Length: 300
Image (cartoon, rainbow, N blue to C red; front, side):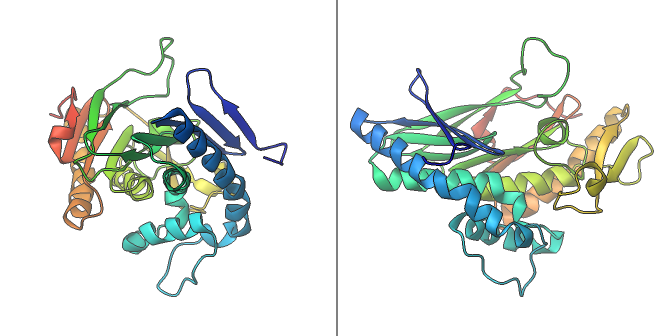
């Protein structure tokens, strides 16, 4: 790695940490030691091009996709556009899939360089997975990561992904995960929405849009501001993003979750997601392959 801003740390527990600018990856590979080393070196080599390639096309990546949007040049940008195209009606920009697409790209470099039994690339909670037959990975589900808790995030559920399932990507979006001190905004009021899909990029854009759909339009206790007033560089421009939500009744929470559930069900029917779990104020709803999920609270 040649740029001072690009950091590589081989961690004592066997994981790899790569970071440059806003991109922060935690990577773990399993297999023979030599194969793991080749995979980590391939990840680091791939990572060198990720941020420069994205910056080169950033202006276009921040615009909503249209039928006539020209093809992108960079491999990560092409992944972003490909998974966002089915959602064009939502005026989505390719940036909705950026974290997942980066994770997918780095994982592809690793698996192309070495035979691994399993591996994952975690880009701020958006995770790309590789699993060989008989292998599995478990992940925790967290509805609230913001707030005053001193003992860290509370685990609200658990998903075990086996190689036999089509899931190879997991992503989480929502106000608690990104809108409060995180990397992007939400148009909705979900605390968190976790999506399981065939790739991390597909999960990323779906989680964003489902979280947007968990909403109570026009509710007096939902405070919104134009995204560009909070972050002038946001790809959402003047679209109003949620900045505060007052006290909601149980019926209002359930109604907001049902809106998100409907959006998730449409994506499931279209083959765009495999499962989703939606959190709001201590209640949860699920869509899709329910055996994936355990330990979740139920919505009223």
